[in-house]
Image: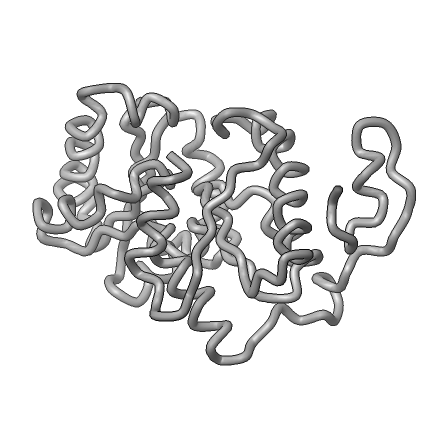
Length: 235
């Protein structure tokens, strides 16, 4: 799935942009609960720290829950964008309403929370679940049909003018679904990649003043001891 995400990002990246798709070496295999998300964040931050050491110019957090987004912005010199953030803002430029098609119903609340955070809840007509677990997007032979069914319902029942794919593992379905539905279908991976690339071209960075300033160094205990100096590359 990481390779699929990387391939989708490379398809939209401009000449001269190198996309490196990475998956944290620690944490859950997929994120489908608040517990998963909390335990995924240290691995995300470790990858950002490694990217900083290697000179990465910007970052896309390729999970629709945008896990660790604020913390990553405190570590990174360049822009950091989450795929839900990018997809929702892109949708607001293409129509007056959107619906999200995600994996499991238990993640619907998180998606509504993000729509609130990004100031776009008024445009969100619905969050629909195809009830296919993230890892089964690659193995369930009916997964694509289930996603299409929910996308059709988003247009017909929610009257959504734009449909967002609520999982990075759906990124490769975007073009086919757009052709099938006749409305814009947004893959957040592609949207976030182009947005990060555009911010870099404009020479813009996350503000170092205030909330996203580097975190103050302090000791961290136990399994998180190596995160005690978070502005330094992880070993």
